[in-house]
Image 1 (cartoon, rainbow, N blue to C red):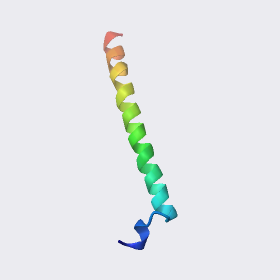
Image 2 (cartoon, one colour):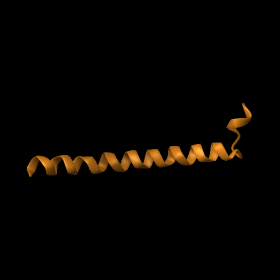
Image 3 (tube, rainbow, N blue to C red):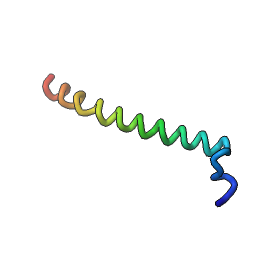
Image 4 (cartoon, rainbow, N blue to C red):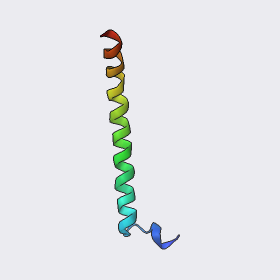
Length: 43
């Protein structure tokens, strides 16, 4: 494995945090978009 993919690498830690944040953000956005779309149609 290349040195850049070592777990102790700060860049790798930032990448892991970024991926985790994106997954959480996508899940929240997907759940939030459903009620918003229904609300807009009803209004």
